[in-house]
Image (cartoon, rainbow, N blue to C red; front, side):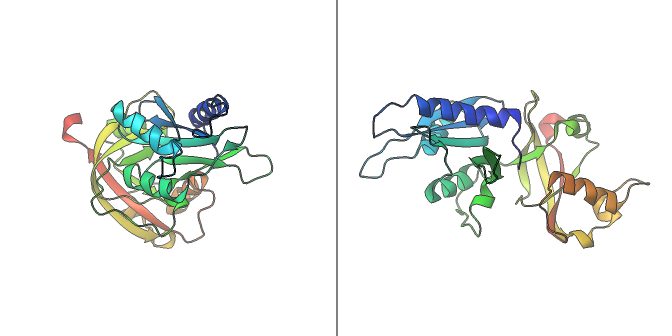
Length: 241
């Protein structure tokens, strides 16, 4: 996935902090995390033979101390010009349990890309879900859907590579100044692309399933030909009505 300016900003903050760490062997990695209001929180690792915390976990704690709420972007960088670092297995599990809708910046996989970004669930396939974990969930939207969502004209979205559940959530409009919007996810149904119908998608007259899927592929360019997708319906929470 390509990074937006706000995500590059998180990466830049992590790399800048890592560059200032000096020669202390107990602090060699820096992390930066962004919350739904665009605030960036930072932390560095604390190495210790008893098992000190990674930089990502310290940054998550810093954000929690500031009552940041759900995190949307996470990045870590190493000292000595090592650049972006992928999170370790423990950090991936912690992020998944506490911030399951976060995107994590990782080293670029192509010859020209300096950074990629991926959902935390993609970095931990076949993951274990902590049964006692009850994190605040996010449903991400392109900013063009803000008015349709706030006016309750938009109540359905189709997602690939995500895992949503019914219940309270926040609608998060990416890379805008709009704050998160409390919503209730009312239903989540899984279908293959070939099973989608105008009725399932609640399409207006004149709209086609083929056109809807084509737009979906623009958002998910690596989506398989007959992928399984989630059809998510939602409504504004009572506080917004």
